[in-house]
Length: 73
Image (tube, rainbow, N blue to C red; front, side):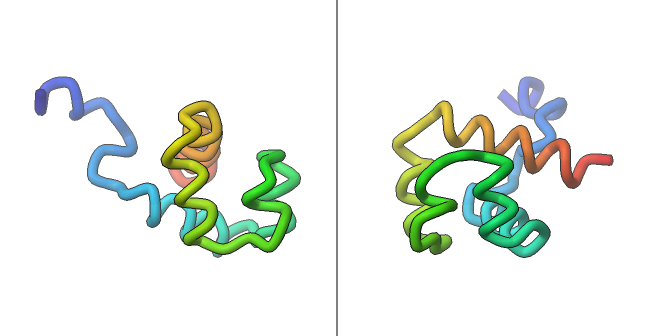
């Protein structure tokens, strides 16, 4: 199992940290324009975003990909 994770850039990073870091870096408005999902555009909070992203794998993937693109350079 650890063998599979060593190439995963998100290994050990929580979804909460990902959303918090992206929000701090971009702000809600920019984040909402980069990833067009309601939880970033309508009364956004970390808590509501986490709730949505945990049940929508496609949206979580977009957020994780943006995190990697933003902070892995």
